[in-house]
Amino acid sequence: MKISRRTILSGAGVGLGLPWLEAMAAPLPTIDGTGKPPQRMAMLYMPNGVNPWAWTPEGKGADFKLSPTLQPLEDLKSHITVLTNLWNENSKSGDGHYVKEAAWLTCQTIKKTPGEDIANGVSVDQLAAQRIAGQTPLPSLELGVTPVAIGVDAVVGYTRVYGSHIAWSSPSMPLARELNPRSVYERLFRASSGPQGNEAKMDSLLLDRVLGDAKRLRTQVGTADRVRLDEYLSVMRSLEERVQRATIPTDRPADHAEHVRLMLDMIATAFQTDTTRVATFMFGNAVSNVSFRFLEGVSAGHHDVSHHQKDADKLRQYQLINRWHVEQYAYLLRRLRNMQEGESNVLDNSMILFGSALSDGDRHYPHNLPLVLAGKGGGRINAGQHLVYAEDTQMANLYVSMLEAFGTPVDRFADSTGPLAGLLRA
Image (cartoon, rainbow, N blue to C red; front, side, top):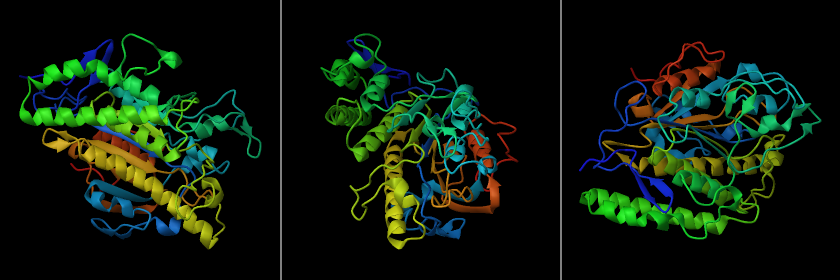
């Protein structure tokens, strides 16, 4: 039996995408016509920069030792590339945060405005999504955990909208982020009928509606596929129950850590089922002051400790918050690594960027940005390295490289000068 990659489990007006199974026919052709497994691209943004004295690895190339902040990635070392000395020159002027955060994926200079005529550029994720339009049910997935900030930051004269978006489909169009895990979960089911919008209460679990189809499919596939299908349905059941437990009247979990994990699980599920191949996630908005008191040894908000003024205790707390974000990144990477896809896995066929638009948050320093790229991009990324570039190398060169690996090459992106040396395999 051969089934299509687009086969879904369906029932009672909902449909759930399937993970890769041995019974599936060849994967859908990629935009370059290779017929290889689909590639994915995700950008995970962390606000407020990092403690720079605890970030950079020791050594270069394949012979490098992870820093204390990056230590949670030790078991993933062969899957990651740490990038040192990249920056966005077009964000060097202006305020401390908004000019840098809004341009993290565009590498442009944003227009200073109180909000009526915002202007930026097209972000790299949306350029990729536009070029593979129609190949997946969702062109892209934009997620966050904090509502859009409104009004004008009177100190610097920029609309706070800039600090709430990293994905831009056009210079004047930031893409709305989904903050409600339940809504994302329902989107992944691609409901075709029944309650919609805010009135859609999961009075009966969505997964129950497709289990009949799942049972029929189990009888038609091999033993290995039955195991994969059972594992997938178990994960989806757990995810659905967590969404229900986490939901509060505002439709956002009160627990910040669980909210983040749920959103990362949504990205993993969307990639596993090829529901989308492009995603962005914001751990927080610019100037985020989320309390991290749930971490042992942390007693202050994120933005507060980022302005450490070299105070030893603030630097210690700053590093603990940075490390927690890296731990969440590592969690997503492990999930993707454990998802088989033919002879490889979803992480091998992905590029997952993690980083911030600032380096040292105390100085709002735009040089030497903290950036880690995970995944092998379908074999195009030369992972397992610490690549150290000349000081102030254009970050846009990273995006040119990623677009090349994604099968959507460009001659130029923003102020790029070409692909990053040593990152791509021939």
